Amino acid sequence: MPRLMLSDELWSKLKGIMLQHKIYDKPNLRMIVEGMLYHMRVGCPWRDLPAAFGCWNSIYQQFNRWSFKDKLMQIFKALVHAPDLEWEFIDGSIVRAHQHSTGACSTESEAIGKSRGGNTTKIHMAVDAFGLPIEFQLTGGKVHDAKAAPELIEQLPKSDYVIADKGYDSEDIREQIREKGSIPNIPRKSNSKTGNKDIDWYLYKYRHLVENMFACLKHFRAIATRYDKLKRNYASMIAIACSCMWLPM
Image (cartoon, rainbow, N blue to C red):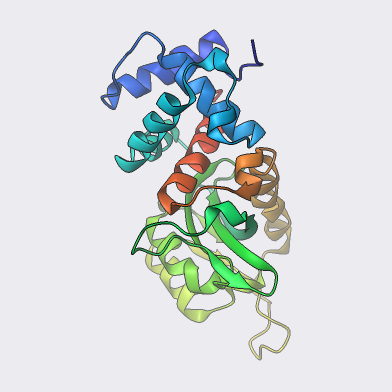
């Protein structure tokens, strides 16, 4: 039997939330979920899943259906219970997109950007004051953090402070944060005439919390390298990982 990720206690909690979101309680539901977690952790092709989890195609088809119906994202949002919104940290991180992730039969953008470094996807993440994920979005790897920020900030709940690095140095971004009732703590670039007298550098040091979140996500090989052709499937895989971080809370 391959190593499993969920204890009986965590599975009981997760199963309750899944049933609330109208996921059918079939006899092998736990092993289907464990098969998805194994794929996320190991990064193997779906067809190489150990037989102990069941038929690989059944597990993949179930994952694909849940992804299409946005079930996995809904479960992640349901697990984000009482986040510490004193501080919110935002940042982006690039992941390599494997050659198998290209060529999707889709007319929509699949958040894969091409550059001299190859195909890449960027994860734009927001975490709370404990470093737990509360929102994320995907773009092509060459999309600048500041360009993706407005959509991410729009989804964030109100907090006391929103902290980001100099990549988000934009008065439009600061104004958007203020309109949400939060205080921006974003340093200005060295060529700025305004200066950084208003920056709380002690608070800025805690920006490592969002960096730590990316490090945790990239422990999972199916996230550290993107293998999914569809943007929604890769987003669902990230949602599963984020759910695992909230489950013990």
